[in-house]
Image 1 (cartoon, helix red, strand yellow):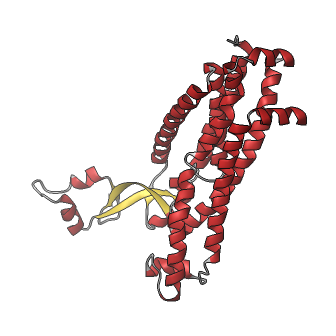
Image 2 (image 1 turned 180 degrees about the horizontal axis):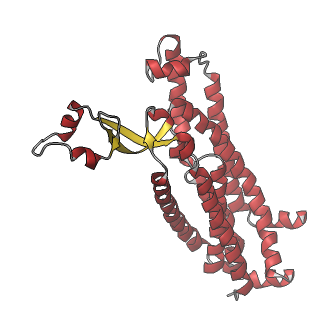
Image 3 (image 1 turned 30 degrees about the horizontal axis):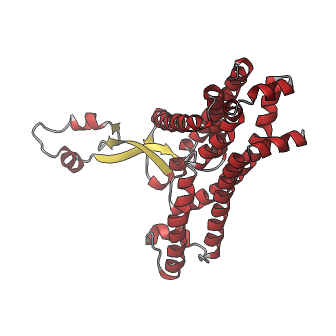
Length: 314
């Protein structure tokens, strides 16, 4: 088993090595950012005081807060931004060549006949690559999670970065791996499979974003008093009696001909308020994000088994 795994990793050493290197470098970069942030001696209570004194801090807090925020705004943002692409690149690099290269180089029939069972061959090929890259991506995901926690302290909503840190990153990489594996088996050419996989993943990420917004709008909205602890989904008006009404209902009370209905409403005791859900509720989408990409990966793996079992090598 170990010998077979070593042969598989050696066979795909360029793609697997590049994918693992990308994930490990990103993870190490995230740990370096954490080291730099911890090296900044921010006095106790400065982060709480920052809410009252402003983003630049004041007094003894001003210098450390600015240095801390500068590191986070520069290097920290780059880490999270890279997490939007690296997991998918790792997945495609690991998945596409496993079957696609065998078909492209016309060695699939020999490899399958030597193993007796095509499915047994496929599992032996998948397991070491998936495990090796899974460890690398998990390391990057955990390291980026620490950076995201610092961004939350700075006031950035973790909801906006769902899928770019923590467990959903691993699920996205798995989804890309399964999709790449299937495309390699279907197309039998590695480069077209890479390109087509990237296009499909881009479309998938877009659809996941649409689904996330739809899910968020389905949650019961509440009046947001503190924007830093909630995710806004809309607006409403509070009547002088404290009743919540929609924008259309409120403006129906405005006399005809008024050029500035908002001003009239404010002068008559109406108050425009933001509606949304708490950060805790919004972060519930992380489970659905991870589940969605995991299902894509699992379904693609199953479909690949069917394709490999039935395909006639060219």
